[in-house]
Length: 420
Image (tube, rainbow, N blue to C red; front, side, top):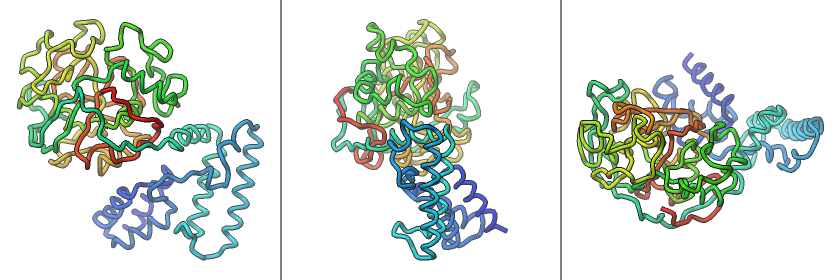
């Protein structure tokens, strides 16, 4: 029975996604062994027979021997006929091939499963448009950052332990318990990313402009505070707001960085203090941060005093996106060393961020919320498409195992400027 239960899980996974990363494959093998009593070979056999692609996402259009231009400027009936004809021809050839192994490593039965997935995805107009939008972002825009980014206006947070979380009377359950976390050294932006900096990114990457970004990566409020594709001329040094997690990730990779993990953000926000509610101590102080509507909106970055690490606006002004998926019990389940939630590694999220669907962590509070919610340990989360006038972000750059300088940047297409 355990084999059948594991098979059901893999089949459900295949329905949701045609491919998994190699790290995910290893994770499912461990699941089969540890929870369902299978051998590693048995779990591997089930995964291989499922038709799942390991690693790079299958290009359904190329699978059917077509191109994007084949599906453009045609009537719906012509597109359907083209897809059906391509599928029929390739499926028939596969049946005639018998049991010989394919050069791509699949069996013919696995290949026919992929052909069916390609046909079914592309036949439905809405699914086809979503798929084409995603494919245009991923295809042909891969960029490697060969050198570390400009570290001006970044602060070094040194290797070591800190106490993460909160147990005071205002703490929510997802902050409990206080626990020791070890982090490798990293650099973090001294200020949230500004409108002027984000404008350079949009100009260099028009696929992330208001007019071009697909709904898959944002909601209707994306850059709503801008006037067209630029900010108000008086707000160059204000934090960029109304940005989705996807857009923040894209910007971070463009400058050769990434978003901070939740643990990195909290260690940086504490500024070397241990156990305090705020970056300056335990007592709320409106002269130290922008919160509780005390300014009626965002303020320029750097208007309030920095914390002990020379970082500005770590609490108040804007919520800041983190790399992690949100889980209520992260404090209890996360690794005590360089923790990350929502994937087996930071690298997986960096490489596959356009495929993320789960809620992402927000930290720091904003100009709109009361003091008890701008506490350092307070946690929040939203869908990665969510855009609001209280959400911004800042970036980090870490050691070679953690940073993006040696990883492929998906969806970004031009050189990295020294803007930070």
